[in-house]
Amino acid sequence: MLIEGDEKISLREASDWATQYTGKQVTTSNIAYLIQYGRIKKYGNNGNIFVSINELKSYYNSFNGKRELAWKEELGEDLNWALSFEQYKESETTKHVHRLHPYKGKFIPQLVEYFLDSHIDDFKKEVYFQTGDIVLDPFCGSGTTLVQANELGIHAIGIDISEFNSLISNCKIKKYNLIELKKEIDIITKNLKNFLSDSRTLEFDEKLTAELYKFNNEFFPVPEFKYRLRRGEIDEEQYGNEKEKEFLKTYYELIEKYNIKLKQDKEDTFLDKWYIEPIRKEIEFVNSEIEKVTNPDTKNIIRIILSRTMRSCRATTHSDLATLKDPVLAPYYCTKHGKICKPLFSILKWWQTYSNDTIKRLAQFDKIRTNTYQICLTGDSRTIDIVAELEKYYPEFATIVKEKKIKGIFSSPPYVGLIDYHEQHAYAYDLFGFERRDELEIGPLFKGQGKEARDSYVEGISKVLINCKKYLSEDYNVFLVANDKYNLYPIIAKKAGMKIVNQFKRPVLNRTEKDKGAYAEIIFHLKEN
Image 1 (tube, helix red, strand yellow):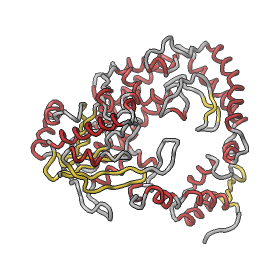
Image 2 (cartoon, rainbow, N blue to C red; image 1 turned 90 degrees about the horizontal axis):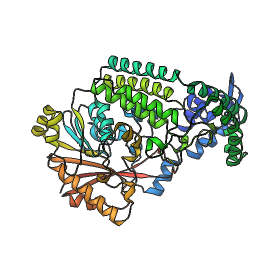
Image 3 (cartoon, rainbow, N blue to C red; image 1 turned 90 degrees about the vertical axis):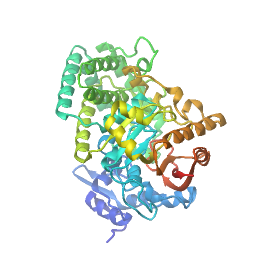
Image 4 (cartoon, rainbow, N blue to C red; image 1 turned 45 degrees about the horizontal axis):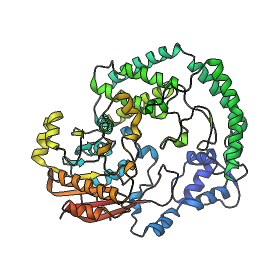
């Protein structure tokens, strides 16, 4: 029975109440999250916490249950809410190896699984792929299709123009000797600690962290500050700027005391511009240690760990990690966390965190992986000879492809003028010396979204389909995930000799962009014309 009125109830009671009120499972951790991030107010003390029913009701009424109706009103009644996958937690949409490395523009594994697995429902009325089939992703990206195909017992081939994207994809589906991997990582970590013992960087960072902790506890107490902020009691910009300037006095005193060099001597490359001097030195040191690893598969997965570490250690604010603006060399007021945050001065913490996380995720995937073939080829999907390339790296897989043919495609082509795929991993290209092929990207950001760019995009995607069609079985199914705001895919399908037989329009939830408005994408189902 629902408790009514403005009663104050415990976290357990709040969990039960919210579960009944919303019709969905709400845990005590969910309630604690609302308190932590200032959505509702905390009453009582840490040993005896209470919350207000009225505040809980206001929160859930402002969002829960209304989004589907509002989005359908804005985007159309053909919006397939079943494909929102809103029931999945982030830990499920980034399960096991899917989170080995950040990647902009990837789809969630549940979307791939929906079309590749053997279930049918009111929307998916037939099974498109069977165990033992081969699926192709000609815009492989970070390898989501390959991983999900492996889970389902389906062979898969990926193609990507980016050498680094291919590395990410192949590292995800590779089988490793985890004991050997951990041993190599432990050696590098030990050597990194010895390298750091000769500098005062860690001592400086520990002192700075301690001073920052005291400062934030005094001026940005959790959760009171965020609670007051959400209710307009504090001018965030003015207050944040004032406190930022106040703390900088302490910061520069410590910089001088420990003789910390911030800027590098030049800004010619990405690594020069976006990394503080001590961070750059540690990156170069760890990379030199990785070069000593003799097993190529082990070396590559450790490169991925370093790359992931590098991405987190760029000299930028937490809110600008996805889209870099200006290098940040000093503590700043962080709008994301509601306190003064600082740039990083050592990679050690993230290196260790991501090393442990990678081994854990690889072990998780090992428990469910199937004995099937997956590989991502580096090349241009418009012209690549898939069988010839497979014969170089995976001759037994090439034989299967020649005998069985590829059953179909599941892919998310790049959107027009949205992302420069090489540039998002510029730090890795700089450090590892991979060849960049920016000029071969289809629909990159640097070409814009004008008519010429759209025409080039249509030509590029249709050529990919024409080339890949040579390797497909006669009864193929092609699924392309796209936000087709320019209505280009009917033209693409026609130029490729295909027809669109169905469209699945899905809401895209939990986007990372600041603009959280209603947004949909379409999964186009194409077959031979």
